[in-house]
Image: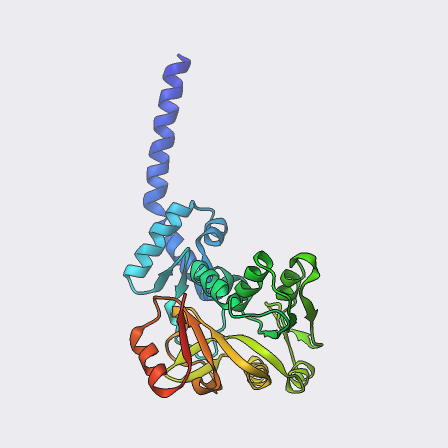
Length: 281
């Protein structure tokens, strides 16, 4: 009798599961869209927790929404298409951090090889530039590091034997990030002179480099002007329509490190319009 009851119960549970699966996909996808519209982009793991659905279910829903042209699937998550066309849209650091992590790691490792002992190096606040700091922790180099990113500074502090001296300017923490900005940060960088600056960017359009916020664009301009050698770090997703504020032209950059999925026509245009050296990670 217990065996028969258990079998009936299992069949009932399976049937209920099928019925629920037939009822909720549209509602679940609507909630998924709402989450992405709120955040702009998100990893599958976060969406799975928020929706209380398995990651495999979220993947199928994202594939469905991608096919309908509502989202764009990315490595490990998705980004809402309606947000990517807004010039002032800036994803939260947590969302930028997981976006194309393998490409960023390769870019960071290659960038770290450009450094020499004794150099002064400015690290911009960027999820891609953070990958350089992580590479340095694995293979320390004796440098003086300056950064307006408190998280990046904490990562560099892990470099073995205290080989890296770290300088952090004053400023105000930008909401949703670890970035120090404001007039005091900008003023500090305007009086600084360093050997190398690693800079991230929101968008590369032709030879134009742009950012979504005025405050961050002003600080990046100051960073670019302070370095003898400016190294721009950008994965392939950064090539596209311009953001709201101009930071600089590509001829202000000495080196660009990107990944092998960067659009060839955009790289050819950069080579034609600027003297920027291009490195593929």
